[in-house]
Length: 286
Image (cartoon, rainbow, N blue to C red; front, side):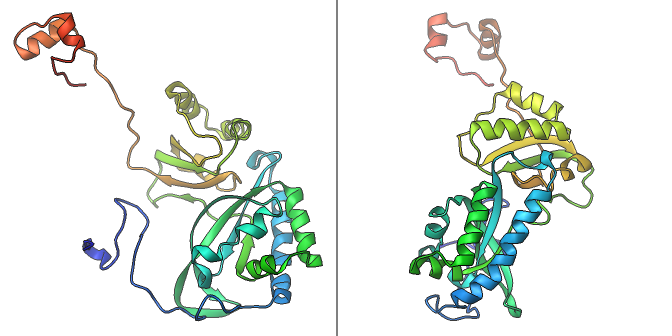
């Protein structure tokens, strides 16, 4: 039986600051997921202006806050379609809109009708180039989608370039440790991203990171620890490749101590041969 933790009640969190992975089911507005919440024509009227806003906002974003050939934007799926079977992967991938990850979002209303309480929906991060967004918008305008794709589109609540505030810091944060979380990028894109962030002011921090030789998988989320001021971190709030940034309690790099044979002998009372040391017969701490 799952344990309950303090004030979480019936919720079961993963370690500290983790996601809630289970909770009691709540009856939400809208009934079963198979029933459409709007027609395709209504979806066109809803999403076309949003796509236009994404294109305009990206074009107006300063060059140092975006990559040259890659753009990231978000697609929020209506909370009624939280199940994996409703994931709109087909209509996105079929139109060169690559899925860069997902997370939950809180939906407060649907078509102007406020919910009694916010409902959990799925937010999809998309990576593409701006020309593909243009083409997708043209396809939506001309209704160039098959039946399945149209059904997937009707489940989308909203499309936005990015959330308004990405940098999450305590009110009393002035300077300290923080974690930058970036969208998946290729090695070439990451080099461009890193260069732009250095231009913003992250010079000393990235020099340290280079010395540590931190490694990442290509096309995977990147977690980058830094020491920075509040002002410096908030400069990244509009950086398109940044998914999220948050304060950390500390950043600690492992330190290793090397002991000589003499020191080990003094510690454990008698000397051992080099052969015994190599065979791991003498315990030591680091």
